[in-house]
Structure formats: structure tokens, C-alpha cells
Image 1 (tube, rainbow over the protein chains, first blue to last red):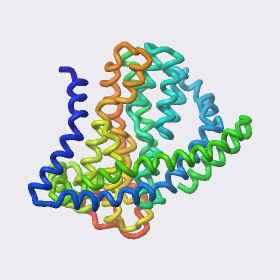
Image 2: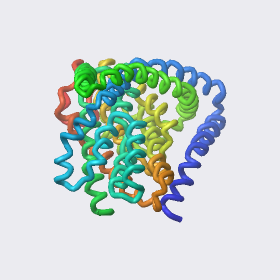
Image 3: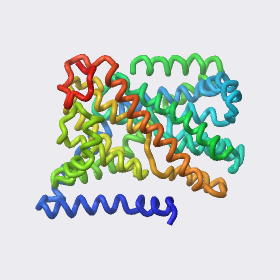
Image 4: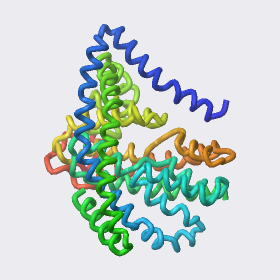
Length: 179
Length: 209
């Protein structure tokens, strides 16, 4: 079996297995699982509503940023640097967008893949960049918003630095594997 | 966050005006606001489900068992929270759910972990070191299989989409480990929270006064 088929089976069974395990263990310990479940589930609405103001702030700001064409401007500024390191310029929007918006990153990725063709180097590199990252700003807004944290200290900086390291790693590893 | 918010919007308006896209920028306010509420509302159901499940898991001691298994690692990463805090088990569950690409489960569980960390937090509006560490682990997005990306690749007729799994895994691992390392480093050198933080555990982490 290949690594992927093992992973597919694990992914398929992970949720059912966890749910079964939780319920079985609960019943075995004589816990009223239905009552406890509904009691915990009551919080769901509250948490989702709590994060709305934080999401609105972040997502509106980022939507405005994307609509303003700033990303293309940043792209133009960095293009010579990419050329110098032989990184395809097509990939640039991905590098900027992937920390800001997950759906946008996926959209830009489909866009690139469709324009430069499935087998091109830029497609591979952007696939790795999109697949290896999580949207830093979104995670920040949701997780800190849910508990009402507004002073971030170094949290954002760490996320962005790690994103940057991820981009460098993607460039190097893709070059070693596919160039 | 105040500056980030301000400058994102300021730059958007200036750049939008320069690019002749001011109209799009204004429209983005409405679409962004709508999208935020859509995201939040789509979370309600799945949030409720996992919070219910996690409550059972907590009551029957499953979370405590998981926390115990990964204690050697979490003790070092989250040295400011008590070793038997339910946050530890939640964090482990959230990170593994992410690793398997179960985003629908990972986010609610991650939020629950954040709430547990908030209980240990001394200043309720400022992120604690543990919160920053947990956030760093999440923003690095450690994932074993990039399922969505593979789906897109298959969609455009990429011949061998599985070949990107190994490099992606390598990159995400590097990013994940660097995030932990950087968070740990900042924890040591960044100014502590305004109120005095909880006493540190083993003294393995100096510089936190």
C-alpha cells in the first residue's frame, strides 16, 4: 500500500473512530451521553456569534486590501528578486495571498494551474505552497476572537515568520525535486 | 492589531484610489462583511456537534488520557499551564484533527482549547505565551495530505498529483517546527504580559519574570 492509500483510509476512519470511542467510553463510565452532549453543544451558537466581530474586522480589511490591487503592486516590486533566484513570477500572488485568505489562495492557485498548464513548474511550486500552509490571519481572528483576545503580542509575527520559512522551504525543495 | 487593522485599510484606500479601483474597494466592504457572517454561521452546527462530543470526552476522562500520553512534549511547549489542564488534551486533539485534514473538527476543538487556555490566562485581553504557542502551531497548518490541492490538480488534469504529497509534507513539517521554535524563542525574549504571569513550571524556561 502506498503512503497515500494508508492516509486515505486513516482520514476516512479517523472521525467515525473518534466519535465511537468517545461515546463508548462515555457509556462505559455511566455518563448520560445524550444530556452531556446537548449541554456541551449549547455553547456552539455562542462561540460562533462571538467570533463575528473579529472575523468582520479581519475579513473586511483583507477583502479591501485584495480589491485595491495592492497585491499586484507588491508583486511587481518583488518580481526582480524572484527572477534572480529563478522562481517563476506566476507564483508570487500565492506567496502573498496564502497568509491572508485560504479561499483566495486556492482560487489563485487554480488560476495559475489553468494558465500555465498542469505539468509546469509554477503549478507544482504553487501546489506545494498552498498545500503546506494555513491562513494565518483567519486562524488568528477565529481563535483569538472566540476568547476575546485583542492584544496579540508576538502571535502574528510568529505566524508570518513561519509562513515565510515555509515559502523558502517550498522554493528550495521544489527546486531539488522537480527542476 | 490596531495598527494592522488601520494600515490594511489605509493602504487599501490609497492603493485603490491610485489604481482606479476605489469602487471595488468599497464593494469589498460589503462582500467581506457578508462573508464573515457566512463563515461564522456555517460554524454553528459543527461547532455545537464537536463541543458536545468534547464535553463527553472530557467527562469520561478520554481527554485526560490523551493529555497524559503527550505530556512529555506539551510540558515543554506549554510550560505555563498546569500539566493536568484539559487544554492539553484539547490541543492534542486539535492538532491531530488538523494533521488528518479534518478542518471541520479541528476548528471547534481548537477554539475549545483556546478557551481552556484563556482560563489560565492572567490578562484576559492579552495573548498568553501558551496561546501564542498554540496559535503558532495552528497557523503553520501541519497537514499530512493536502486533499484540496490534490483535488484541484486532478481537476486540471495533472498526471501524477500524489507526487506533491512528499514535498508538501516536508515543507509543512519545516514550517510547523520553525513556528514552534520561533514561538519558544519569542516567549523568552518578548516583554511578558502586563500583569505578572503564572509561575513557570520546571524553570526550564528562563527569562520569564
